[in-house]
View 1 (cartoon, rainbow, N blue to C red):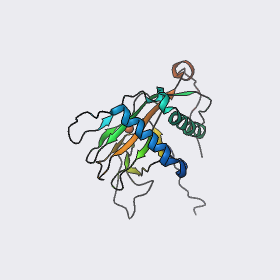
View 2 (view 1 turned 120 degrees about the horizontal axis):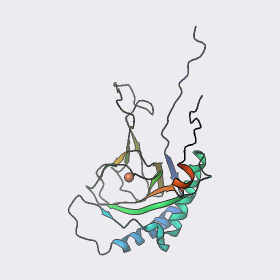
View 3 (view 1 turned 45 degrees about the vertical axis):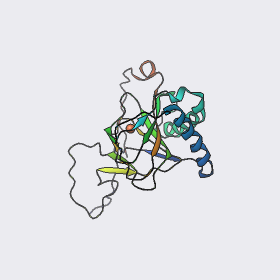
View 4 (view 1 turned 90 degrees about the horizontal axis):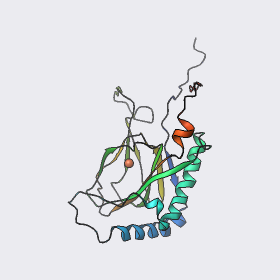
Length: 212
Ligand SMILES: [Fe+2]
């Protein structure tokens, strides 16, 4: 009776895991770590459980020029995938996070941007990940034998030194408590279309629906 039954995954939420060449990662991360240490030295006294964050202008500093190049390369791939590479994008903010053991980042997203990302400079051996939350409202979530991409209500991205994770800025996420014994050091950034109002906001009146 049935001639065909196949799922269509509509409105998927892509994120991108970008790994740099592992042979390059150690030296690249050592340089980034040293630059971050310079910025936050001397370390302020912060309450236990708190994070250090640098100013959000790292993308404007010459010491981070190679890192900005890495962002630009990764962004090019993302923009091509999303078919928006004809529109220039710019980094609107870039900052480093230093999370000692026991610290976490509560749930948040990155308003007023199109893409966001995080790059891992140093990651504890265990107990460190980035958790994205299901954006679908009113989800019915019966227990299943195995929660997968379609049935889970969260997605865990595994960090590792030399890895960048990029995602839509509206996607809510948090970083659970650092359960390791060493600091987690990451560099976060946001990107937005350079000329959004001028070139992308006017009504187009064209259909935006996709189909199978
Ligand atoms: Fe974030």
